[in-house]
Length: 422
Image (cartoon, rainbow, N blue to C red):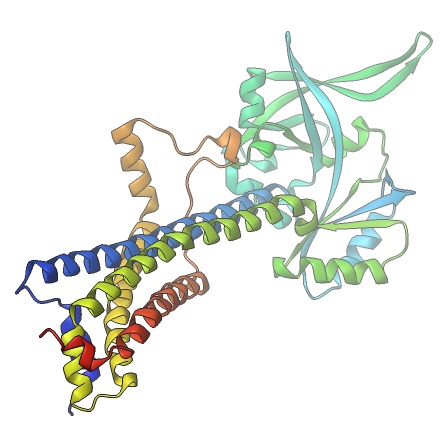
C-alpha cells in the first residue's frame, strides 16, 4: 500500500537532514521540544501518582482506627450514651450493605507516668467485634488486641504515646479522667492504674500519639455509663457507599441518633488533597505547554527553511490542505514520540518510587517524608489508568494545537515569491 506523500514528507522533515548546519540546528531544537514534552508528561504522571498514593494511603490508615460509619446518641446536639444499643446493632446488621457492627465507648483522659503526662483519646472496645470493623490488629507492634480482658484494666497504647510516656509493655501507667468523684471536700478527678498490654503503630500520627484502647467493660465502669455505650461502629462491604447508607439511616432510624461516615469526618482534609491534586495538575501541565511553544518555534523555523520545497510542491499541484498535513504530521510525530517517552519514564519511576526515593535519600542525606507533618512515614505511589489517559491526551492535544499556526503559515506561502531568488 502506497504511503500518502504528506505522511512521507512530514516524517522526512522530522528526521531533519544533515546536509546543512541550519538543518542540524533545527533537528536539535526538535529534540529539545521532544525532551520537554517527555519530561512534562513524566513529571505529571509521577506527581499525580504520588498524590493518588498519598490520598489512598491516608484513607487506609485513617480507616484502620475508625469505621466506615459511626452511629451515636445525640440530645440537642450534645453526645448522649446509647442504652438499648444491642437492639440497634441488630437492626443495623439487617442492612445487606453492612459487614460488621461493634460497640465502643469514647472519652478523654490524661495518662500519667511519674512527672510525665500526656492527654489522649480513650476508646473502649470489644476485641472480638472490633477486629471485624477496624484493622488495628494488623498494626499491632507488640501484643494482641485480645489481650484486653474485662476487669483486668489493661491498655493498648499507640507507639508514639507510649514513647512520650516512657512506658513499655508490662509496665503500669495511671489514667486521670475528667469525670470526678464527689467527696465532702468537693469533686476530685478519678485516677485508675492500667497495665500496658500492647502497642500499635498505624502510621497515622493522630492515632499513634493520641489514642489508647481499653476494654469496653472497663470503659463503661470508668466513665460511669452502666451498660450504655457511646456509639456503634459499622463496617460496610463497600466503603464508597458510606454516604449513601448513612443518608438512608438518617431517614429510617429513630430520631435522636447522630450518623457520621468517614467521608464527613475527614471531609476538609480529603477536599484539600483533591484540590492540591488539581492545582498540581494545572501547574505541571504548563511544562508540557512550554514544550509545545518550543514546538511552534521549531515548526516555524522548518517552514522558513523549506519555503522553496513548499513552493515547488504548490506548483506541482499540491493543495494548501496537503501542505498543512505535512507539517501537522511533523509536529504530531514530535508530540507522540515525546509523549511516549514521558509515559514510559513516568510509569517506570512511579512503579519504583520507593527505590528511587530511597536512593536519593541515601546519596544526598535528605528526608522527603516527615511523619509529624505528612502523617505517613513513606512516599506512596498509585498509578490510575484514568489519570494516565488524561495526561497523555492533554499532551497530544497541546502538541497538535502547536502545529496549527506553523502549518497554516506554510499553506499561505506564495510560490512565486518563494522561488524569486532560487
